[in-house]
Length: 97
Image 1 (cartoon, rainbow, N blue to C red):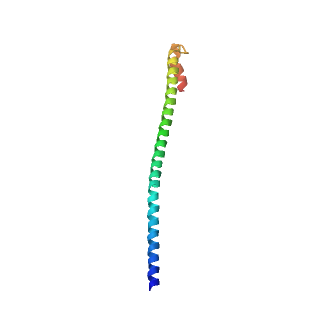
Image 2 (cartoon, rainbow, N blue to C red):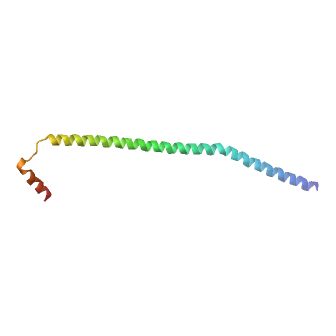
């Protein structure tokens, strides 16, 4: 009977040690999980900021193109019309037909 008690004591001790090992593993994982969540949030924020930078750059480019187009339009408005005034409508009708 003493053998069974010793065997049961060893089994219980083994189960206790296994549970303690699992608990220790979980405690060790908590900071890692927290760090991973933080890293994921920071990556998402970085991606969002990169996207905003790209949009600002695209806006700058569009504004430059708009300024160039407006300048060309102003210059075209100041330039003399290439056809005599009496033929303006004839020219327009030729384009339409």
